[in-house]
Image 1: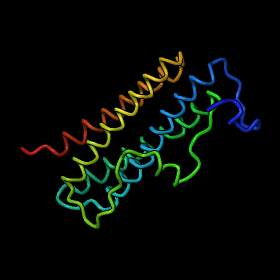
Image 2: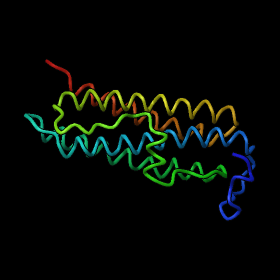
Image 3: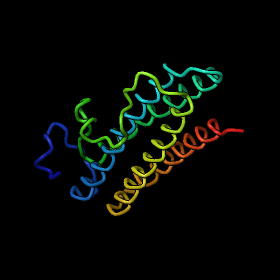
Image 4: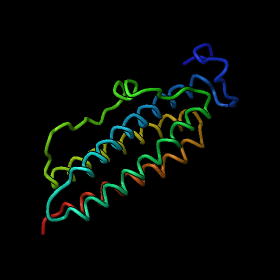
Length: 167
């Protein structure tokens, strides 16, 4: 995104190269779209989980959804701090998300855990793309903060894996 693509009212001062930060912003916006998709899927499964481990899964999924939602604002603000624009609508999210929605009427609890584990690992891949773009752009702040988001997603995947283990 070039400087001319930014509405002057949204211009943000930064010493980072505009062309370089456009690729960082694009990577961040992709990760943001996946965060929203994962948040909604996690809440959906939280609302619809059933079975013998209901209480444990219900609480774990709510905690994970809260953590995912908490990251969204930090991602969007990082995009703005680099002088770029972020997502504006559900349609924008849908165009950018790589995490696939799950609209099935019923999903077994074990399948929920596997799907969310895999989706969190997809999010880790998106965060690694952000990290690469940030380092190439010499955007130290984004490069540093994305490590925390990656660690959180890896931890969620680990918890989902452990919760779904048999025996």
